[in-house]
Image 1: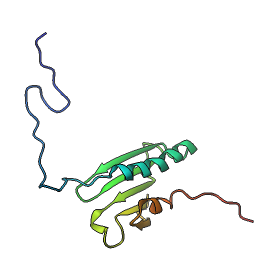
Image 2 (image 1 turned 180 degrees about the vertical axis):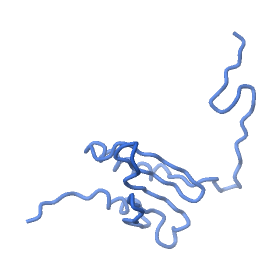
Image 3 (image 1 turned 180 degrees about the horizontal axis):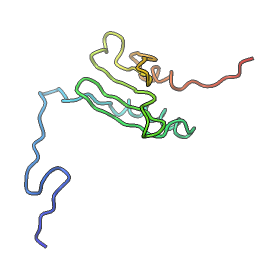
Image 4 (image 1 turned 135 degrees about the vertical axis):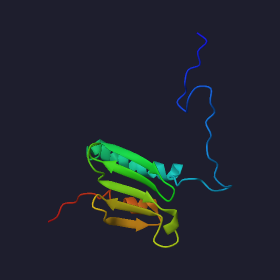
Length: 124
C-alpha cells in the first residue's frame, strides 16, 4: 500500500497554487467574526421559531451575501449584503427582499437586521 491518495485540493502529487492578492487587500469581500455572530444570532432565533430553515454565504469580489431560505429548493427570502464601496455613502449593510426591494440600509449591522426581527404586538 504505497499509493498516494488524492487530496481535496487537487490531484495527488501536485501542488495547488493559490492566487495572491496585493498586500493589505483581500481578493474577495467577507463578513468578519462580529458580523457573523450578529447574523447567526438572528438566524438561530428564526430557525427555532420555525420560520427559516437554510442559508448560504457568498463571498464575491465586491460584496458578501448571506442568503436566507425557507426551504433549500426555493428562492432566497432575504439577502443580507455587505458592500464596502457604499460605506461612506448609504452604509455597507443592507437587507434585500426576494423581490429585490431594499428593506433597510445602514452603517450598523444590528440596526439594519432589526427590520427582520420585528416583534408582534396586540392592536386594540
